Image (cartoon, rainbow, N blue to C red; front, side):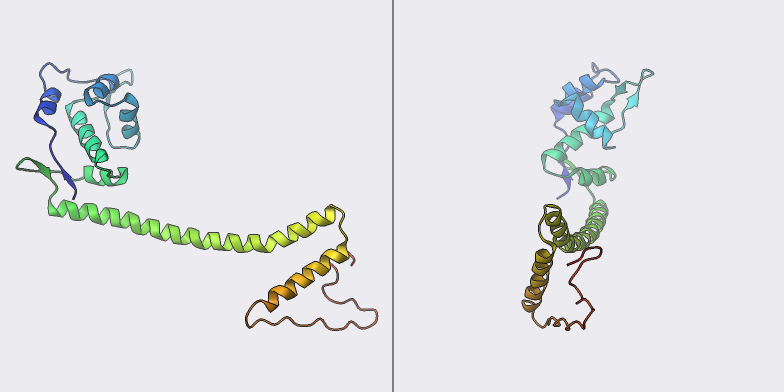
Length: 203
């Protein structure tokens, strides 16, 4: 699965040519590899390649950098993720007939590293699901309150709105299996019935 064939002899010959300069600029290296300078900078920003720097802080690439870029580009063309490629680049390739391959030990190390990342992501997803569920529940609780206040501010009658809320609660309770809504007790003279008014607002 995690295999890498060596660059073609013609490509390798081009990279290792005696006529090639010892170090290449970003533009020259990109032209040599057939990509844009931005592509090389992107992989450097991801920590996949670390070119040397000139005194003027210009990036300079040697043959080993070009080989590493060639390997990255090939793996990307095969659909491997940058996280997967990062793990692959940490392990050496073993020469075999017709190319290079990872050893069984290296494959296992890559597999374990990626499995650990997947497990961490699964745990993160589960946490986010719980948080989302709690947020949705809270939003459902706040929405009727917000609706009441907006309608009151729009000039609707408080008594009518409170009666609508009371009816909605009764209806919701009756539609919930096993849930019973207690009938409000009759108020004694001079005593208000619970729920007939909201704090600071007379019904």
